[in-house]
Amino acid sequence: MIYQPRLKKIYLDEVSPKFIKEFSIKNIMQVPKISAICLSMGLGEAINNFKVIETNKQCLEKICGQKVVITHAKKAISAFKLRAGMPIGIKVTLRRDRMWEFLDRLVSIALPRVRDFKGLKSNFDKNGNLTIGIKEQIIFPEIDYKDIDKIRGLNITFLTSSSLDIHAKFILKNIGIPFK
Figure 1: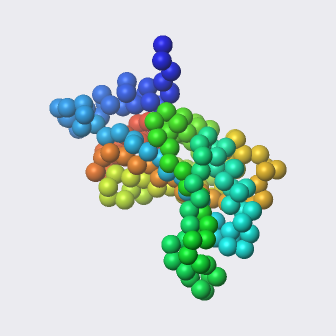
Figure 2: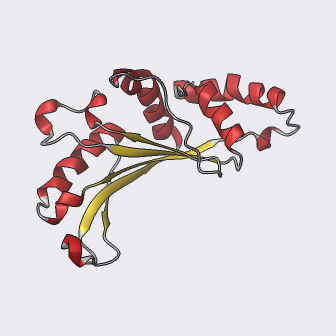
């Protein structure tokens, strides 16, 4: 038997047929899919201290289990002492089984650990993609308090194949993402 992530199995067995019934879709290929999850951290203080990039790079690699890419400044901004090409952030894009595993850990372990959590705002971008901001990276159980120098936030973007926000919200809500 081939391994299949838990939320992927739920998506294929329960959410897809429910979506076809709800929106009266004739072809199963028209059902929206979650194509990728992008995680990013902006580290503006890396201008003065490059060690910030390395520590947070290791932190994000522990969270997602994949190698992280360092992002560089495109333009020079003299007010911030920033030159073009300086490292100022990190990002990673998750796809396939790693994406489903991360989504499962986010929904079942990390989000319930957020203080005073009442649900996510549905901030869709009119193209079926959802972006959320997390204020503390320590909600993930992979992060050890001793390894971080400062509590930082990160952005998580869910990219779907849907062009309508209603369809994307239906898929994400039925997978288990808690909306307000």
